Image (cartoon, rainbow, N blue to C red):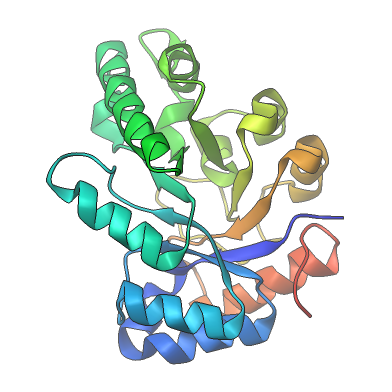
Length: 251
């Protein structure tokens, strides 16, 4: 059986800013089985959590600051409100511009993972294209694998892997059970170009799903930006993934 399908709500952030409840209800009506949060455009953690529960939407994971420093309790409280046990974090491009910078990032991520583990939360990293390019003769993600705690899992953004120059099929195969979440977006695999609905771009999702096998616990649709109407792309992405038996929906 394929993994269940979720939507990263960052995808519909602009529409949520106008009518968060209406957008979330639409996502549930389409058949998405879960959501991933990244801030709370147009709503609050408390209101969103109540609505998710009413609609039967599981919060499969949450993009969040790390549970360290001044924001530690706020982050932990938000995770508890959502009933979510997977926290996703990461750093921007500049942090990975050198090997030393990458190692420094790993130290910080290890600190975040330790704090999460102490509170019963699994800690993961979401990638962009820059982790899959070479710096000083080494692929950044390889350096990360050498320096990260084994407690840390990966949310592999398959589109950004390919955009960075690596093969997402081989990467998900290499990661195995360490990559329980896959971010699914499509398009021309260009750093700056607009994305498309899933199935309308360059990424070979059937091959990725086959390579990942039972290791994938959630297929999470996420479009940072889109060449067409965003909600239309959300609808088409659901239809493509569930219609081709690449993800399990609720309808």
